[in-house]
Amino acid sequence: MPSWAPLSASELAERQRGLSEEQLQQRRIVHVNAETVQDVSATDIPGHWGPGQDDSWDIERFKQGLQTKFHQNKPYDSAFSLVGVDASIANAYRRILLSEIPTLAIEDVFIFDNTTIIQDEVLAHRLGLIPLTGGQEGLTWLRWYRKPPPKDDFASQATWPYDVDDNDADSATPNDHNTIVITLKVECRWATQDEDGRDGRRMAKEGETDPNERYVNSNIYAHQLVFEPQGDQAKHFSGENAIRPVNPDILIAKLRPGQRINLRCHCIKGIGMDHAKYSPVATASYRLLPDIKITQPILGADAKKFQRCFPRGVIDLVKDGESGENKAVVADPMKDTVSRECLRHDEFKDKVKLGRIRDHFIFSVESTGQFESDELFLDSVRLLKAKAERFKRHLTELEEGR
Amino acid sequence: MATDGDHEMADATAGAEANGTSGDFVKEKQRLRLLPGSSDTQASFAFEKEDHTLGNALRYMIMKNPDVEFCGYSIPHPSETVMNLRIQTWDNVSVMDVLKRGLSDLADLCDVVEDKFTAARDDFNDSHPDRVATK
Image 1 (cartoon, rainbow over the protein chains, first blue to last red):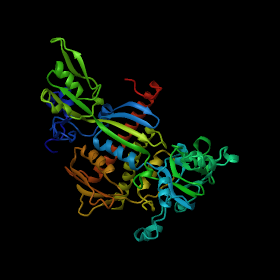
Image 2 (cartoon, rainbow over the protein chains, first blue to last red):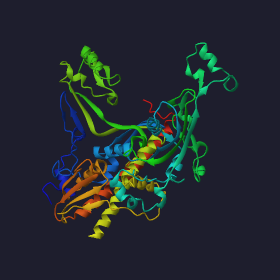
Image 3 (cartoon, rainbow over the protein chains, first blue to last red):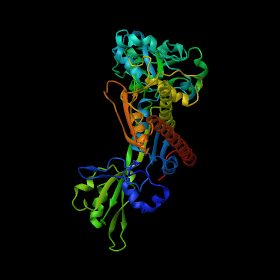
């Protein structure tokens, strides 16, 4: 065993001087100075602190150390703290949230008629970016559609028939199990007295310029997309769960009288790694909890100035018993943005130490509306586990093959 | 278009299977290769269609194993989705065992996170009907 390998329990007890709470807490902090950052890397690797410290993987110790605390759990906007994981794991969850959770979005647009000034490809691009929703269990029932590569991509064409999913023979053809059909058929015309109760042409002559008054269907919104259930889809996507845009008031195009749009969209499942329209989160990010330590008391007018260097609520002023003046006290470090403004002033730049806590991640998950934020994070955790399990199977295969 | 018989999406399928939608026998493409020059106590693996997401997390879990002398991952070229992982061990410990244990530990970690997160979420929803922490 190497010299720094963990010792037996008795030797450990002997060597362990008993790290105080404060020393352990010190090890968790990344120091933020005026121009530099220190102690960035994680130090909980076995051997880093010598034989007296056992940092090897222990699921029980991890379970005790892990804490989850919610700050907000609105359906499509969650904020929670994950304490006790390493940065690589938190980052893996964040990356999976952004790019590997499957979502439904419009992919192929078949345009029969487009006489608007919005070009076909621009219109198709805008349609693809509209977030769609349709009930959780229906979306998990939907299978994958493996699109054949374009005819001019010779490299993929060479391997295409053999690359198709062996498990689902129909995955290369669009069918009711893997494709959702949405149509849009609108035409803009002048408002008439008979149909709309106002005469657009007369109003225009009299000086009316608002297109909503003069014309009908001059603005095309997302709620005008019509979901057409095919085959088995009516069972899974009906009523509340019908495929519909999350935000019905997204403006797709603007038309004038005589212009028509007639198109059919095929929606399929995809992941954010392929195209950002498939990302289920508006964004998912995390930040580390800031840490402010006041090493010497800051009193009186200095304390007030110190309070103004931070966002409101971070520093509180309390009456100091001895001198009777106001003393600066850290109230809520979570509101801090670590702008290091206090390090720019000579009066107290030596009396304060800024930092961040290395294993306290404050996640913010904003969903686009297809799934709920907390479910998205759970999906991300399960997906990382599925990846690990999958490679365990591959490893077994590799070992057997040798 | 990258959605052509795509391997990346296969993991998402695996994620969906983790939800219990399919229990049938699934044929998977082998995405783990052993690079030449490897022996029983030191080996380099190539993971296809993987990147920093799995690479860094797996590297961390394997480094937590005291039998490991060296563990590092790299992505040889950003245009190819291949991730290389190198493991060297002390005292004749098998590299395959170390990798298997690293993957198992990662799965266990995810289980613990999932359980604790679900418990905290349910607690929070019960005690905060307006879904915002009162402070």
